[in-house]
Length: 256
Ligand SMILES: [Zn+2]
Ligand SMILES: [Zn+2]
Ligand SMILES: [Zn+2]
Image 1: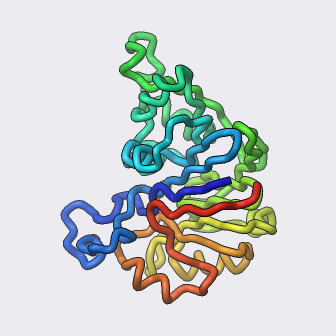
Image 2 (image 1 turned 180 degrees about the vertical axis):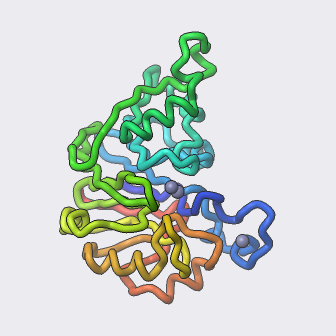
């Protein structure tokens, strides 16, 4: 399967509105971080992980023409704020798009996008979404992909990560339990969130994320959900060679 990091930034995106710091004013395109999201393309179809407020631009840049499902890690707005922009794919595919998330996330989608589920809304003015509740450790299939949702702690919130074959995707983690690390044994590529150097109650720091990469033991790992605290060019040389900061548009192949 072919994976693209569509966005690698924290909830505000980088640059952050109004900020004149060296990262927000950097001319390095790798320092322009849209909200964290990834696209998985396999022979059988395309799956999007999270649909934040930058989703429209991300799907245009990646030239996405169809989606067979959207996996939602959790309901924070930087992960679901772009769902209305699925409408053109509804028109193109002439079908609903299924969102997969925990019941709490599904409930949040229903209330934030109430008009999409209202009998009174016109067909083209609302996204056509089917909601499919999932729970950690219960395997699901989308197109030809077998997906294992894994439980992740995000501050006080219990959210989902995903293992798909030899690929694992974890965003917004603050801690990862030993049983999850064990379940990720054998993963070739791990995407994991790493906010900044300073600890944060809801997100892993660079050091914490590096420790989890060591515990899980993938061949390669990419950091996402990065803040405006560090430039790509300053972070990359500080990390072990098998760990790299992700950047928007980065692509790689992983065995299924
Ligand atoms: Zn987030
Ligand atoms: Zn800044
Ligand atoms: Zn979050």
